Image (cartoon, rainbow, N blue to C red; front, top):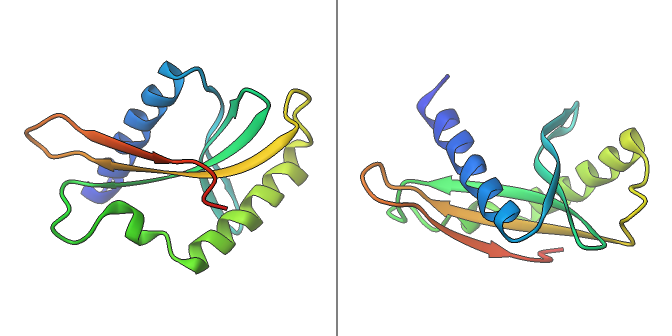
Length: 120
């Protein structure tokens, strides 16, 4: 696995631990379809949440959230619709939400995490 892929997986594990510690129920990890991948799908109370995780080792080349462009947001909406079409409704979910989690994970220091709820 390439170093950037390993970093991405590490960030997703960090994000997942942070979410479960806040009471989220993880339903799916790295769900794929022909259009792309959703990093995490979770329940937050009555909200079905599609979560994009962006990980960097530092902010030297920008904050992780800077990688979430309008095009990426549009693709996330299409991926959420594809997930719902493939999996069907989740009974406990009455709302849908797309969130972003930015992880800064230096090699030699603890990671920091930032969570933006409802980016769309």
